[in-house]
Image 1 (tube, rainbow, N blue to C red):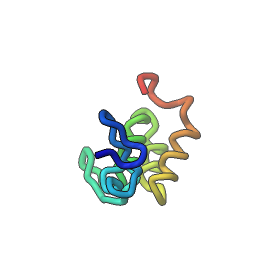
Image 2: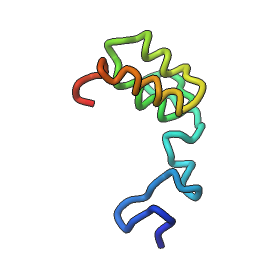
Image 3: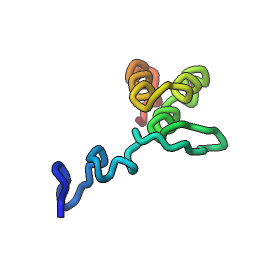
Length: 82
């Protein structure tokens, strides 16, 4: 059974039933020995290994949405394979 936007091949995690699986869900995680408040921050952090100050800004973002916005604002300097 699909939920709203879901299809037989894709689950859209922003749906309420699956929000805990979203990168935006606020669950602390450790990645490469570093604490992140959301998976979204860890995801965007990986785009900028050559810019540690920017990585730290992303890691310390107040929310997953803020981490996303910081990364979007620096898209021109992210690793080219992203």
